[in-house]
Image (tube, rainbow, N blue to C red):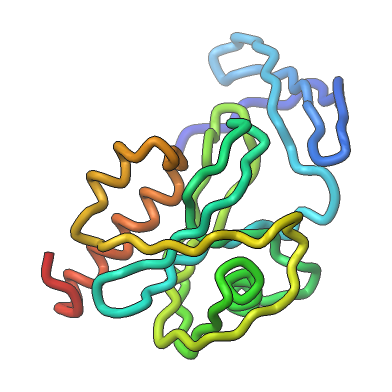
Length: 188
């Protein structure tokens, strides 16, 4: 494994309610020095979870919510922050209830994904939820989310949908589809 660069200095150069911009001065093993900036989460740092909730053997739940980053309503998977002391699977079930109105009897950890590791520190835990039942919990969303669905057979068309742009959600859907196919639980 390669030797990580030596940190010469760290400084928070900007801060908002949700994020901090950290400037990091590094020296690489060949002597080259560079300054990197990275977006780091502010607050608890317990992470986040994204849920691929299967309505049946073929269809996954999508939610539509307003996204400030794109200033538009987007389709994605249910997701949210993990609360202090909360288990990843418990957080996944809570977020699924808050955002989509479903709970899951079966929850399985799949993997961890990052969005843009070159300049963002945030990672998200991907969880597969199955054997769903209706249950809604109050959440922190400013308005009710519209619930939709996608067939695992139509993922390539989802990538072309004007209201869908989140790479992590697409990756999570493909990972779950491949896993279920390998297990013989889904036939594409």
